[in-house]
Length: 114
Image (cartoon, rainbow, N blue to C red):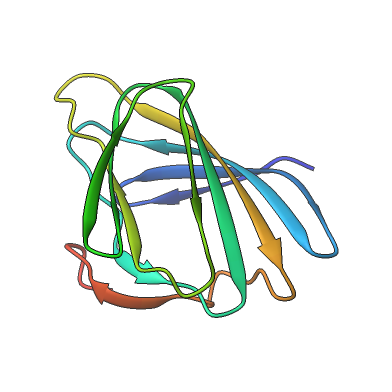
């Protein structure tokens, strides 16, 4: 079932998916940052497995190391950044909600112009 999709900041692989949930392995390349966004239909749980993450959640900044996690509720504004210049950041994202499509994104800022 594993399906990998490339993005300008790295990639994600869908590890498992069923009604109401999706599990992804996400790699963020050194120095890259995802868009500042929110989701209407889903919440997320991020578990850092390798590297250090700088997370913005509702305009507050958190630094997480491997083994640490954070919960993101529906409609929370959020993004993740890999501040390392050398190491790839890897985390597991668990999505929970009635709709889990990639188009459930409202972007507030994005360095890639999306």
